Image (cartoon, rainbow, N blue to C red; front, side, top):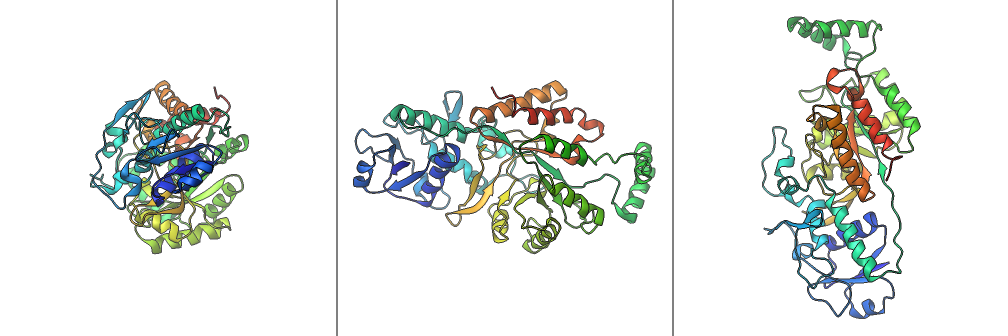
Amino acid sequence: MLLVYTHKISPRLKYVFKHICTRVLGIEVTFTTKIESFIAHDSIKMSYTKQPLGNEFFIKSNDLLFEQGLNDIDINIMDWGHSKCFFFNGDKSAIPFDVFAASFYLLSRYEEYLPHVKDEFGRFTASESLGFKHKFLHQPVVDIWAYKFKEALENQFPDFEFPVKTYRIKPVIDVPNPYCYKLSGIMRTFGGTIKDVLKLRLKSLYMRFMVLMNFKHDPFDTFKYFINKQKQSKFKFVFFFLLGEYSTYDKGANPNNKAFISLIKHIGDYSDVGLKISFLAIDDADILKKEKIKIEEIINRPLRASRQSFSKLNLPETYRNLIELNIKEDYTMGYINEIGFRAGSCTPFLFYDLDHEVQTPLKICPYHVMDFALLKNKSLLDKKRVLNNVINEVKRVNGEFVPVFHNYTLGDLAIWNGFKELFNVILDSVDNEN
């Protein structure tokens, strides 16, 4: 057990030390403000304060972990090996940066509480982030810093044995609509047919009737393929089904349709099932509660995981609504159009409520690539290269790689050609560790 001496045990300090030490490095950590207890401790220990007590393992602390609320913070990004960091703390420290304060800044999403420009859906965009502006978005810097901290500890305490973690994956399958033509209902089918005729979309018109007549396979129906892949993988996929009402933003299947309900139950026999929260429910706790009750009736167990429609987050309200309804995990932390690490980490972490200065029980499972972001690369070879780059970044720190694919991504639409191969690259990455 690592003992940390500090001048003040704050909620922020406990939160970030437990993430880096326990969740990333796998070692327990405890804290003391008493010099006598620190001296008496006979295992690994360190001090985290303004001045060292003596010749102990010492990291000079930034003020961030002892503050409350939001303040103006001077952030100076500097190179550190093959990565970057901030909160430089001088030569006396065992490592040249306060990685705990820097990690807290990223994990708490401090920057998302500050004034920023939102996109048309009201989202915080990658281009507004520190990682994007200073070109470290592509790295899980929090995990990289944790391993640099571990290396320094190993040099000081060579006899201490750290547990060994292994790389793992958690594929997310987002299902905004299970089918392209099936289960649309009479009015939507009629409306779609009229649009096809008026816009001369003859191929779509042909496919619509061939699918409805059961002569062709619905292009969004890839669930048999996913189930077969799930059977071959030791890592559970997580499917998120949209049950919200039809709206301007969400156009999913009727949540009361028996065939749709049967599909969700069938998927739940093989994989984990979560709720894709509708766009209107993101800001309306009453709608969210109805959707949660509905999916729990279908899967016949408490809802554990959620994903927000359009990957929209309103911090801290979105997460507070999930906590209020006892939802344990959320998979919205990522960027739709950029590959990388929005919170700087590839290790799930707990949401810290900056307004209330408290660690919450909600586990944030950040995703690192969405299928749409891969479309920026024209050739399949380039897509593979980019995908392998982010996989290798996660492997270097023995993290958890979370990709987001949609059910239609592995279908027959030309825009998604080659994406089955990309999905297989992810599944095979577990067996090809170097």
